[in-house]
Length: 406
Image (cartoon, rainbow, N blue to C red; front, side):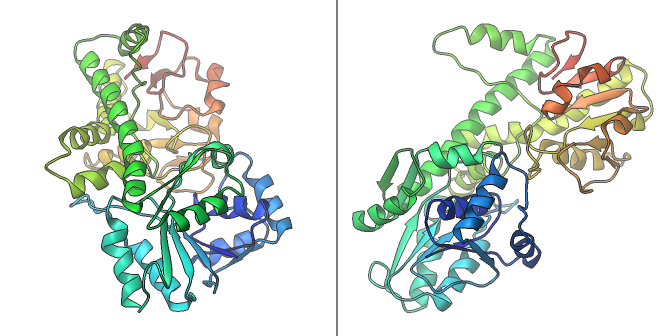
């Protein structure tokens, strides 16, 4: 039996995928309300195909509880934030989960850390906890790192089809966990050592962050000299060895906006490009805010209440708002002591910010400047509702040339 610890955006789909493919699974989370919701037959966030997967897993016998289980395999999938000042990983949730596992696990158990961690985190934090509890790693307890590689909006497909990395102290243990994940994973599964597995996961997200930063910096340069960044990128990408990404209002989610900082925190003198790239991405919400103020001035809009931000999530067609550019922009705005801008997102049904609307038409009423921060299908399919509005399109979803861009 597999005990999956942490039933959030990664842990829940992973637990459901194992269960629906014949593995006995118990999902554990300290959040009583979350566990009660799952036991009531409801998922806790929206994701394409998740409800169907949930139903299959329930039929297969998956259980949800706040209690850790006595079993031979644990998969830890809890959050890994970073310290804002030092930029180093905060492993408190991983540490707490491993301590609880050590309290009840039998000898011979395997602990799989699926949470994204910086290189050396398992050596620095997890191994000492296991050893302090009197276990000998490799004899009494096996330790593995199997980082996830999925994205909100396409989780179910990517869980099935993406390749995986398994890091283990021994080939034998790595192959055993590879076989476990092979229950559902159709992609290649590579077995390596733990520190390499830690590094590869962080590097994948860092690579993406650096490339996004290049596009964002290019947008700033072009804005400064009144050039069309999108036309420049289009032409440059006609070169067979050039593939510049599209700039945006910032970077959100719990991967690209967080993981590269782990490297900056651990290797501050060696991560000049990475560190500056992260600063560029983090500066984009304030850049957008400045664009808003300039457009207001140009169009004689003096009432901040006439400006509406479309989109609260960090990407299109999901309900995940962790680290979203919109939230970052609102934080920037607070520095100016101005009333909070009105906001609307069709995927966020509960109030998470002030001045939040839950009806698109009501949001558009009396709004003169609409700032598109997320390219949900809703707004792509309802551009006619924006007729007569001034539009700042930070996602390039409007086909019309008569809009403001980054």
